[in-house]
Length: 191
Image (cartoon, rainbow, N blue to C red; front, side, top):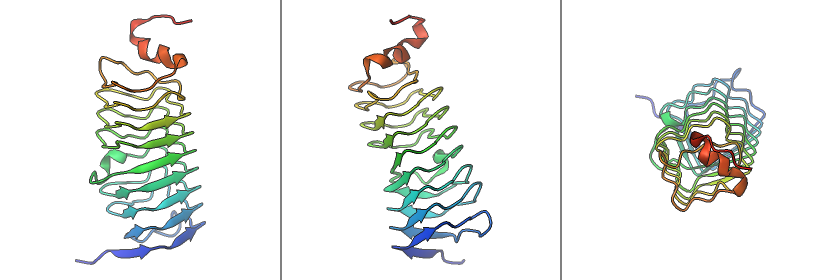
């Protein structure tokens, strides 16, 4: 059995991992700047306290990946299956990133942060998002079903449709403009 490599406090800049296969390793406190990972197989990789800036990880395979205390800034994260990641201490912050068509099905992401993100058609079914922040996010056609949103803040986000009867929203913050997204199923017109 081969041991996995380990990288710490390193910066990887402008690498196209569609040409150069990424090294299967645990990466701790590393920075990835303008790297391309689309459709890369990152299965069993570990990313602890890493920062991804301007990277494209669209459609990457995340089976068993550890994502702990990572930040994604201005990244393209389309179609990612975060639900296939290692669920032990999964934690991430997303800023100015595109996560369209991704899945967080059943993921524990309490205290998660999404700022200025596009989250269209993202699956949040059975996701734990207690005390999470959705700041200025587009949640068009995102799925919320049996989702834990207690004390979550969606007051500046928009285009969501959340059924209060199917989700736990006690203490969650919504704006007056977002009220129609909580009443969609009733066919009520709010003016």
